[in-house]
Amino acid sequence: MIFNSKQLEELDNVNDGTSNIFENPGDESSTSNDSSETALAWRRTVLEEALANVKRSAARPVDPSMTYEIGSLLFDREQRNYGRVKRSVPGFLDISYLVGGEREFGKLNVKAFLKEFGESKTVTELARCLDLQESEILTKLISLGLNPNVAEGTADAQAAAPMSDEDLAAQNAENLLGSLAEDTASAPAEKKAAKKSKAKKAKSKAKAAKAQPVEAGNATDRRKKRAKQIADMPIPSKPANPIDDPNTFIRQNFDNMSNRELARSTGLSEHTIRRKLGEWKLKRTKKISRKKS
Image (cartoon, rainbow, N blue to C red; front, side, top):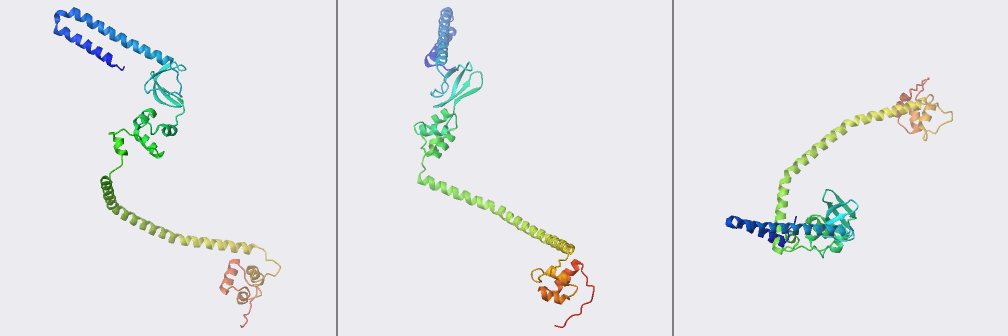
């Protein structure tokens, strides 16, 4: 409960009256009567003011379009509960009920509120209205391109005040020394990272070298599979062009032509001719004499 100056004076009078009892024991009866009357008057005043405050809150509408003083008492007719204003800006109202819990009315648009009142109100007032930290208010105002209205003498005012040339030079020197210290401390770590990267590259090269025979084996398997497919296909009766379709030409004429003749006709080497005949499992039924070139 909050006391005003009049009530505090009455409390002092009560204390003075009680202290006189111990100083003048003979006047105990008269002093006790005066102090009791003063205490009753003080209690009556407090109760009357509390009753008047409750009556005002009951008659006051709960409207988010209105602006209420933070901490003022309101009565929510829908919930049938009394509550104190926690946040109140145009279009938004936040009430904290005395029995516990909160309720919000309207929608809080922080950006619009700061654009309208960001320079007319102080940062402390804005933080109190929006229930935010002053540092957050400063950050939002700067992001909106507004000049914060900071009270002189506060820590935020000192932080927002422009720095002198000497202070700026000192800060730049401190930043330079800090960056040099960080570079010196990070040098061993960078060397270790470089060694690790070299080791990783060497391992990857070794893995690639091991993987090459596997790839070669896969290529051999594919070639054998292709050769088997060609061998299983029936030999076409139509004569094939030795340049355009050397495989068919070899299969059609291998029994009548030597490897050298097939190589000259198709443009392939004799070694390739022998390999293809072996893969296709083709054997000549008669011996062919070589022609002298």
